[in-house]
Length: 199
Image 1 (cartoon, rainbow, N blue to C red):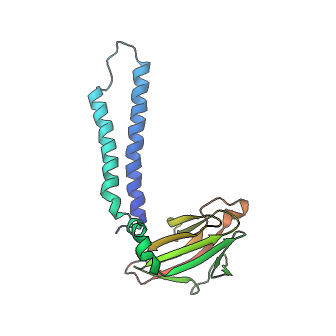
Image 2 (image 1 turned 180 degrees about the vertical axis):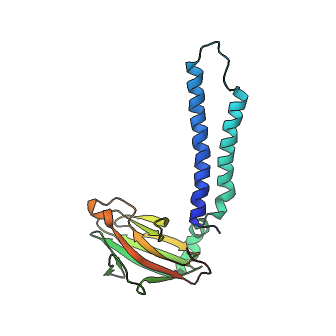
Image 3 (image 1 turned 90 degrees about the vertical axis):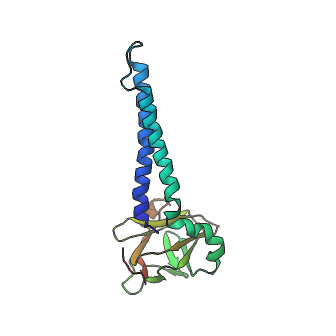
């Protein structure tokens, strides 16, 4: 199983291929409508269309080949079966404050008081809100996002995840919830232990 950072790198390659293909088509069209009617094409049509086809096939192929390596796919596909018995961590958000088990969380959780989550175990995050739409995202120490979900008022919002590396994660809202939501986060809220490697 690969890390979400690797997935991001792969997605960058895939969507770069798509963007290059689209830009090539736009450029080809612009050249065709602006050159004199009797001018020879700068690039032979067969070469151009071959290049666009190569980029498109490369992008689609990478999607197909990497489908089962994306870390959250197996968890999501099997959540209705295995998620029923998964350890559940229940959060709520109200008035731009995260709470865990009904207790408001501080802006920074002191060392040793983090919520401990096991490694290599499917867990469930259940988050509720009644006032605004918020986000619930876990971020690494280097501020890159590990995972996130939207938290909609009046609905169950659940996310299943299997942690593959040790680390301490910050909870941040990933949705706009008004000016007060700009700094909605709990630093060092979750500690994952039991893995053979760290972030």
